[in-house]
Amino acid sequence: MSSALFTPYTIKNVTFPNRIVMSPMCMYSCEAEDGKATNFHYTHYTSRAVGRTGLIITEAAAVTKQGRISPQDLGIWSDEHIEGLKKIVQLSQEQGAKVGIQLAHAGRKAVLDGPIIAPSPIPFSEDRKTPEEMTFDQIKETIHAFKEGARRANEAGFDVIELHGAHGYLMNEFLSPLTNKRTDEYGGSKENRYRFLREVISEVKEVWSGPLFVRISADEYDEEGNTIDDFIYFAKEMKEQGVDLVDCSTGGVVPAQINAYPGYQVTHAERIRNEANIPTGAVGLITHPLQAEEIIHNDRADLVLLARELLRDPYWARTAASELGAELQAPKQYERGWN
Ligand SMILES: Cc1cc2nc3c(=O)[nH]c(=O)nc-3n(C[C@H](O)[C@H](O)[C@H](O)COP(=O)(O)O)c2cc1C
Image (cartoon, rainbow, N blue to C red; front, side):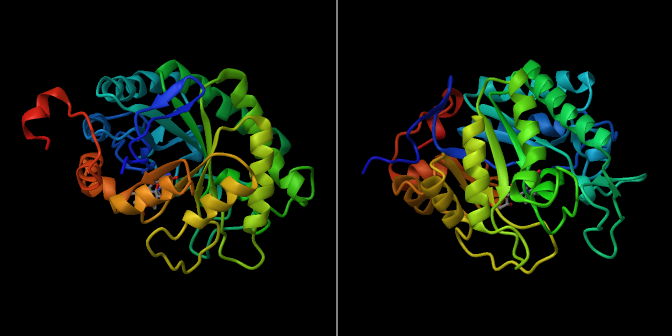
């Protein structure tokens, strides 16, 4: 059997050497609270690149200071962040990986001193701060901040940009009727709730011509929330706008009990792929090589994203190749100990 997981995949001018993607994971490691990459980041991402991960998507990087989840988040709100990000990119690319960045704004889920902002003044939970409802000017400034983030990502040399539209952060808060109670053109109907993301995508595309992914939460685990059908509609809009891939996660919009089991989010990637006719990424409790192989081989998604398993095993691609009997070129320094 030839392995589908180890076939290259091309989007625009970028070819990923295989379908294995490191899912973005906040490392909360900017101890100086300045958003700048640290030695930890260089070691952490480069290890997964040496381990032959095809695409590494770095953790959520905040497009504004106020849009951080925590004070230790990675940032991309200033030109001063470019140098450190460029180093992550270069070190990982030297080892053969492609590198993406997730552009994010935490919205009402920011845990910071000072005011926080969201589409509507509703706290995530009783113990969280009530956000300020964004003014029209704040909406436009934030959209511009995403564009500036994309410009900096381009200058840092990233191969891919992923917009964080999932897990109840700002873009997701605009999409969801649970968190968006606005009565202006940014709230109400599906079309209006999509407007913020629409404008972010079109602004980003002015400065970014490379592969563009959007991560979504395809299930909000709430009867009043968006359904998969709503996300098929949103995904069609994204496709129309030139988004290249929808990364299908779930949850985080409101507190909810989630029944997570192996591959629990894969059906969303599959439905969106088939019904919106757009490439997708599958994520969530994908840990076994055969499971990942099955997803790609059966065309249920185009890429598989692994998060925690890649924390446990930075060489997971090698583990998978070995189990699947697939050819995987060793880093030349490791040739004597690879197979
Ligand atoms: C430590 C940690 C940090 C995370 N940070 C992010 C993040 O910055 N952006 C994001 O979209 N998802 C984030 N996630 C979610 C993961 O990307 C992934 O979707 C989730 O863990 C499910 O995949 P897994 O079962 O392979 O871990 C994080 C998960 C973990 C464990």
